[in-house]
Amino acid sequence: MVYESVEERCGIFSFFFFYRVLSVVVGAVVVGVAGVAGVAGWMVTALPCPCLKRRIGETFGGVKGINPTPPKNWCKVLYIQHTTYSSILLIHTSRHLSFNMDINPPPSTPAPLPLEAPITQCLTHLQTPSDTSRFVGLAILSTILKNENIANDPIILRKLWEAMPYKFLDRLLKSRMSPPSSSIRYQI
Amino acid sequence: MVELAVNVIHAFALLLPTAADNPALVSRTPGLIAALHERFAVSSAARLAWWKKSH
Figure (tube, chains in turn orange, yellow):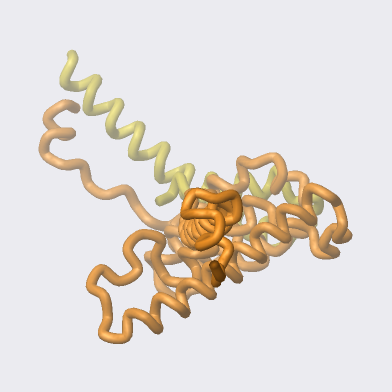
């Protein structure tokens, strides 16, 4: 009798056949796990980390629902979004890693003060020719000057004072009180 | 509005290191005095009206 294969010689439940089936099953499991890991890696870019969320928001102009209705070339768009998400995630992770491992040197420019935005806003309002904007700028200025960090910084003080609209300030000083309304007059 | 202008000038007078030598700040003094005088007149008139009504 001539046997053409091992199975034929040893039967269906032989030792070799079992390992052949086992290798196929293991291969399928590995491919499945890799696929799930790939999908999870794509989905992990949408994790609600504040820094990452902000980067994604800056990239796409909105954190929630980028495009509610899928476009015609949705496959291409999905691919572009996937690659962009991946690059953002890579940058994000590298930054966090470099921060934690202290690989990169600290940036040369100091971090901006949290009060820089109100100062800029105030200067912008003060230098605008509109009286309403100047009034808003003076209101912001009166609030800013109460801060100790600014009160101890002569450079910022000088800059704010040089941006002061003197003529508008004189007009405010010369402004009269509005006549009291009827209710106030009744109280007097 | 007058309160806002006075508040800002007062803050700068306290905070600027050379406030006494600052001509832009010193030249605001007549305006401040005029505003004070006017406010005093208004408050005096209000007090006088209240006094007349209560007596």
